[in-house]
Amino acid sequence: MSILASLAAAYRRRLTTHRDVPPFGYYRVEVGFCIVLRADGTPAFAPVDLRVLFGKKLVGPRKNLPAPLNQRTSNISANFLWDKTAYVLGVTAGNTKRTHEEHTKFIDLHLSALRSTDDAGLLALRRFVEHWKPAMFGGLNWPQDMLDKNIVFGLESSYRSEFIHERSAANELWSRLLIAEKATEAPCLVLGETKRIARSHPPIKGVKDAQSSGAFIVSFNDDAYTSYGHEQGDNAPVSEAAAFAYTTALNRFLEKDSGHRIQIGDASVVFWADASDANKAAAAENIFAGLWDDGDDGSLVVDEGMQAQIVGARLKQIRNGEPLASVAPELAEGVRFYVLALAPNAARLSIRFYFEDDFGTIAANYQRFLADMRIEPPPRDGQPPLWKYLAETAVLKKRENVPPNLAGEWMRAILGGTRYPQTLLATVLMRLRADKDVNALRVAILKALLIRNNNRKDTPVALKPDYSGGGYKGYQLGRLFAVYERIQSDALGGKVNATVKDKFYGSASAQPRKVFGLLEKGSANHLSKIGKQSPGRKVNLEKLVGEIMGAMDPSSDPFPSALSAEDQALFGLGYYHQRNEFFKSTKNGTPVEETAQ
Image (cartoon, rainbow, N blue to C red; front, side, top):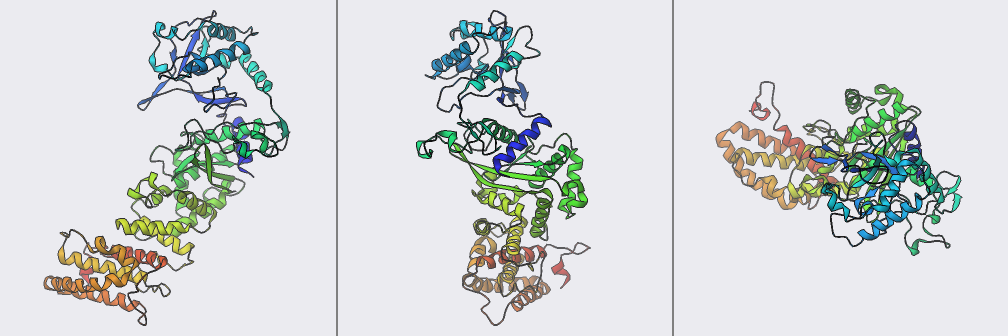
């Protein structure tokens, strides 16, 4: 199923089950204030502030309002029955030369649309529009907070129960206005039915770093994009109903509290499930969200139909390798799952990837990802969410510094069970050389790349002293480097300004011949110092160096002039395993290396 078709289908399901999306022709938007009118159109009292304190910020409720008749970016176009104060009142917080023209557009639209109404609420609004003058704002002493906020109207007798735009007469009038707009009829590419074609699609909001006014997946706004004389939406005919449906569903999924979005690098990722039972779909969506993000920033929202404890228990079982058929048999079959990653690209949106498959397949591929990532000793956090792995590829380990495209490409590979992007290996190796932080997450990524991209199924999870690496020397050289670091540490204690790792890790992992000769000479002096303090300790370290050298192919140069990227990954893995082996303790707490003396 195409992206637009699957989103349109998701809209239809949510309209009947969740009821958290507006009907056709309406738009969910935050409202700041309500101007309450008497029957004669005069304000009854100061505008009602609809906002409530959310954290440290006042936030207004999101209401279903008549959708804009025309998309306004640089254009001037008024909304019906609501708008910002520049349009409604002719006043704004800044000095905008367009304000007078914007207010005039609002007046013209409503005087024309409401000229023959006999509904009390619409009639009061028409009278307000007829008599209001922008200069009146200062004399009424209305709050400055309302400037540039979205304004709705209410009738004094009924504003507590409904706003003017919610009255049945307003809904009927709005439906007639929508039909009155000129449109071409043609077969819709999404629905397959002959319907009115949308000349332009509604904007998509909520994509991180995209234009705040909204951006587009589908748009034709230049002569260069026309074909056979067609203009705008006629180039790729999508009906008004389908365009409204897919953009409404996507905008709902992109909302912060939707429970359907996660941020993976620069990509805003939305996901949704399709199942015969709405509860099954919600369960799959909750589990998927938890697999990829732990919600420590408040982004993970559990659907009210699923208890957080149940979701957490299922997540733990899946991460422990239990098949979905035993964890949640109702989700193993019959639940179709969709994942869409969007990234900003000027006024349009780039589709990083679109993935569709059965939820059971996605869960199995995620478990394969976890198996590839298994490392000993494990990360302190157990099995971290994907974003924590991604942070290891970024400068200063900040999410916003994750290389563009990398996050989306890696997530798509995990979902589909395919090869990881080769840029991931280069990026991790670069970070290791730059900051010398050889930690569990980075080494786990290196191990997973070796298994999946290089088909090295024998890559060790924990220390494997006899691992030859199929002729590759990287693993044993990494172990040897960790031993030289330990020798320096034991000889000089913790008062070293720059350790062996700080000075030489980057060059040792890429060009061993330049470094290991120096390390061998330096370790001889350090071993001599250790021998004076603890002869047994010196013997053990010398034996360990000998064992590592003996594990390498004696017929070839032990210190090659250069190591391949694959060998550099093995170097990091060997270093991590050997270094952490030094920190292991016996049952009585005595360090392992000292018990061998």
